[in-house]
Image 1 (cartoon, rainbow, N blue to C red):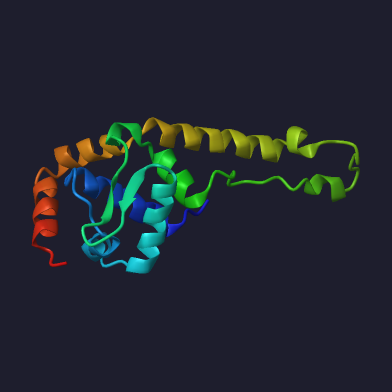
Image 2: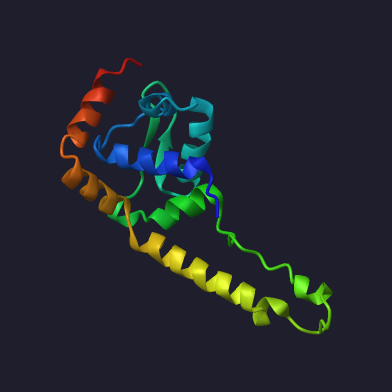
Length: 160
């Protein structure tokens, strides 16, 4: 399974916004933090805004901020906002074209490959749903205690 790189960018943007609460930050400033292409990051941030994860404000003082508390934003919320809700594995019932196939069978339900992939995806989604942005923030603060202040300082000193 390959996730869109925008998922990584969106997750990091959510985490960074936790350390500058109440402030709106432009896509340009968020992109500059990791030297990302502004237009592409902006698309990811807009997707988060459409999903209700971020709010977007227009104008000279505009930008993005979290629309929900970090403990109410799961990693799955961000993944779905960026990559969509569609299952990673989609059974196309190729068994119907194999030798000895039963044309009346619903192989999406009886195929052992499809059911194994479905179980694996459920485990993956449960794990993402069980972790929040707040969990990541807490782990970063524990492992790298200087990161929140360094992040605030970086954004405070960035021009425009």
